[in-house]
Image (cartoon, rainbow, N blue to C red):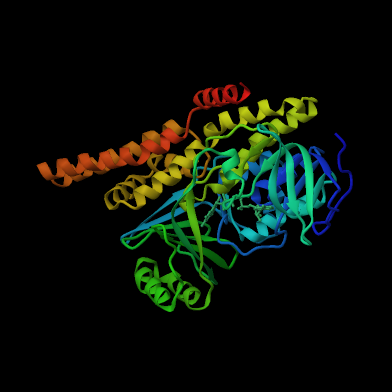
Length: 476
Ligand SMILES: Cc1cc2nc3c(=O)[nH]c(=O)nc-3n(C[C@H](O)[C@H](O)[C@H](O)COP(=O)(O)OP(=O)(O)OC[C@H]3O[C@@H](n4cnc5c(N)ncnc54)[C@H](O)[C@@H]3O)c2cc1C
């Protein structure tokens, strides 16, 4: 295949009838697409990456990267993207509940670096800047409007619209769709449907003094859970949960309610910056989603990042999942490319999909399970008291949250241990028919909460069977 060998700036636009040919075409230059382009570009693989907004964007998403995500950047040799943006190391969590607080450190050991907090826009721009140094990567400014099908089951590239309205076609050996949370191509490559699980309102607390510096903070309150973590040396991100399927409207009444409801639940040290942020700052709202993975196999294409898979952002796991998938997919692409086996790249794609849950399943399950626990007063009390025991009761659950461990069995063990711990505590406080019933119901609720999440994360062998079956169906 003839491949582009010229460097094109982000604002370059091609002529309408000029067909671009490349090995890999990436749709979307967010954290997923840009990091994949960097990883492949470092291995001299010809890549065209198309993004509709190359300028820095002010977003409230993706600002705390867990240690397991930092590790993936190191695996790809691009950890320098954390430098020069005033990113802040994060060593663990402080958890607050009804006037009590505990601290849980990440069990980093010798192999892991701390998590990192940063402004999302700056971080994304840092990854994109890497692409300028990679001669095999071509950045294009355009809005991808179509995946081009060679036949019913094969994608041969994309069409995009330039700023001045021209339609240009890119032909690629592999099209990687990373168009993110609001993906327009999701339904073509994932049979699962996404649903909104609530909203986060985001504020930046300027000149904030955190109760525990260099830590994430989780506040479990009667009102609503909220998070605070450092994103620069002087500011912190605050995310406040709003359940339901309608976003809150930002009015003066909303702002004064926010202050009166939350201020009592936060340590005094945090209040001035919070009140200032509500009064002066911009409150932004983002929807939170749940999206499981059921790949639609189409030759020549694969989907990654939020376009493919989403979970509740409470645990800050999204970018860690994205970077893990990029690393796992990227190393397969690199391997096939350098062994001259790109013609059979679809095998690598199937292998990527079928092994995905073993790397990212624990992060997905924990995020939604923990959100469910936080929304249940008895379970959240049990969880808080369980972690407060310290030792492995705290370090193992937080190793899962930080993706230092990705062991689903360990997750199941601690999840049910929390439920039993809460149930037994209830019985210890008062042993009666009522408390036996309450304890029984609590374990039941925990089971109902986690079962669908575990079932959605199909083990590799099962995903392999499903993919083989759907492959056979379409090859008939
Ligand atoms: C409220 C909230 C808070 C979060 N906080 C965290 C956190 O602290 N830590 C964490 O790890 N994760 C967090 N996440 C999740 C994290 O933000 C995502 O997992 C991550 O941003 C996914 O990156 P992505 O590149 O797949 O998608 P996106 O970030 O959505 O990027 C997609 C890119 O594709 C481009 N694009 C889209 N359509 C087209 C098109 N047609 N043509 C060309 N370009 C296109 C877009 O412009 C964009 O640049 C949070 C999510 C939410 C909702």
